[in-house]
Length: 98
Image (cartoon, rainbow, N blue to C red; front, side, top):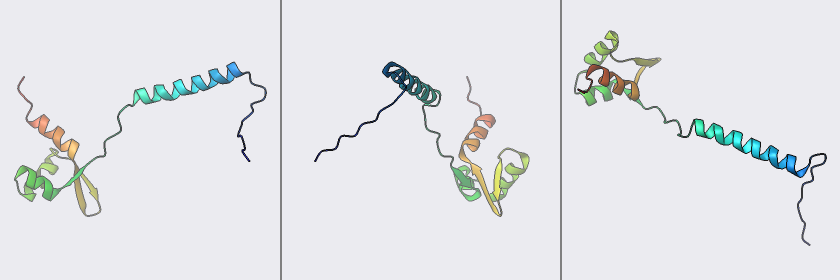
């Protein structure tokens, strides 16, 4: 036995229903156009990782944090640095010649 699934909408003309669907689809598409790229996940670096990258000592990383060159994020005893902010700090310190 074959069952057919159907939905009935009472009190709405087919053209009104069609326009309502089109309006909602356009609204959702406009939201997607405003934010087409997925938000990249932030990467956090440890003090040790930064020291290895810059080939400096851990006290130097602490000194840069105290001077405001790098912005540390603390969670209890853990200290982390956002990779994007480290890259931005590098560009601020050493801007490319134009």
